Length: 321
Image (tube, rainbow, N blue to C red; front, side, top):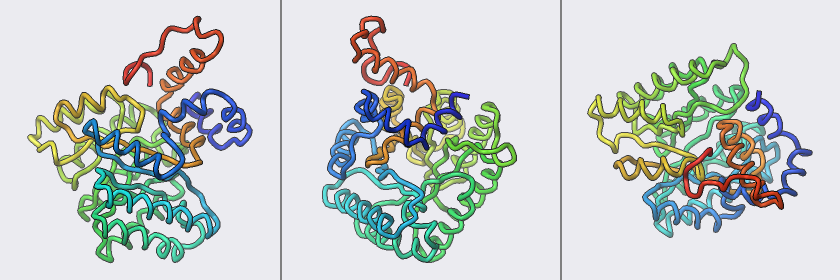
């Protein structure tokens, strides 16, 4: 119920107006370090400094006008230019609807083309984020059209809670395309997605094993210690090289796990979002892992005049986040 409520609030302008006037806005910077390209570059440098690679994401989706879609593409061009010119350990991810998929597939292809060309020029990679199930087939079809033209610096995201994903993983493996596997954070009906947490987890583990065995440098995206342990166990039993895959985690979430995995010799990439659309992103992250609500609530109370009533929050990466 909490998850569904948070997803609902992510679409509420009234809730955003309230949150913007509270300390939660400042605390959102734990997850979204800023709104500009220089803010992102600073966060990438910090992450690189502690052994993490980065996926940068300019927040936004469901753009229906050409001006804003072109503006989003221009932001990505500037991010990729910074990555190339400053030698940053980073790539980017974007949503097709952010670059104009709902305007037309032709407009999307034209607008996206410049971004992919720039990524080629600087030797970087572009991941296409997955949105709600309404867009799954359209996203994969658009990806395959690009793949058929010879693009190879591109990859997709697949969600373990969708019933269809086992087939999609198998297909992407046959293509040799790079997949980022996550559980999924959108509210979906039972006919489309597993509703039971155990089913979602079982699907995630099964798909993870398939990707480690047959995939092309997959990204295993989770903060769930059980899923991480299952991945490490399968890696160990299968004798897979550690550079065959990478763990992917969200900026600001389970930094303790990120550093432990790096210390254990695994590749870890963090997803760093930036931009003005921080509010719906924050609400979805809370929905994805409700324990984050406790972390943020503790921080809010600490900053209030009644802060002495709340135990001191954990520093660094520990605690409920």
